[in-house]
Amino acid sequence: DVKVTQSSRYLVKRTGEKVFLECVQDMDHENMFWYRQDPGLGLRLIYFSYDVKMKEKGDIPEGYSVSREKKERFSLILESASTNQTSMYLCASSHLLDRVVGNEQFFGPGTRLTVL
Amino acid sequence: KNQVEQSPQSLIILEGKNCTLQCNYTVSPFSNLRWYKQDTGRGPVSLTIMTFSENTKSNGRYTATLDADTKQSSLHITASQLSDSASYICVVMNSGAGSYQLTFGKGTKLSVIP
Image (cartoon, rainbow over all chains, first blue to last red; front, side):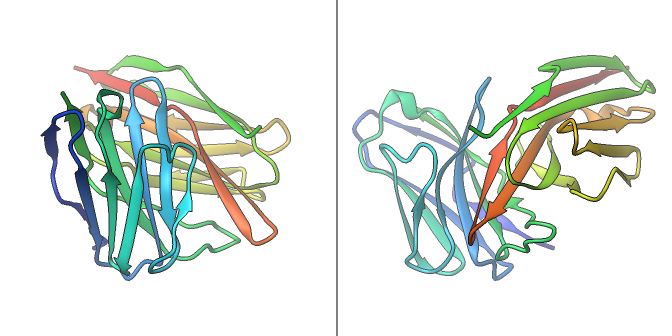
């Protein structure tokens, strides 16, 4: 069974704090992704990584950074949390692209972050 | 600009009834379209994938259709169950020149009531 786990289901932080969200997958997937999900806006890509130490900006990278030191682990970092970063954060992983059928993303359960 | 529009935004149906969710896209060049189901408090899970050459694909009580000419897809749910209550997300992939991009719809929230 594919498993993507996230370090916390719920997290409450204060404005200005540094926040770490951790994601681990056990399927030896090359690709890993971080999304945020907000009501009425759907899923938006923050960053993704296709290999260890590699990262690419998504659609909304401002205010975030990422780290991928090991293949199975992808971390999202909020250097100085702000209230507009209150959201549901979803991690996903997938194999390298299959150009015929694409690649299914396997999602973690999400972390609901509240920044006060 | 690549876009995926889903309708309706939300839907309430009685248990046992059928329903159809719509996904219209303006993604080019089209590679495939995937439907995900997201239960409350969980991450999305893939239901089905449609490639350019496929018109219809079923997964149990879920049937997806694709009309590549009109750039429309639908997800039909037959004999709905309470467990079908979830958000359904349409994701379209375009690929070319060594890269690919996923464009997500905002989802349709389905509530099935007894």
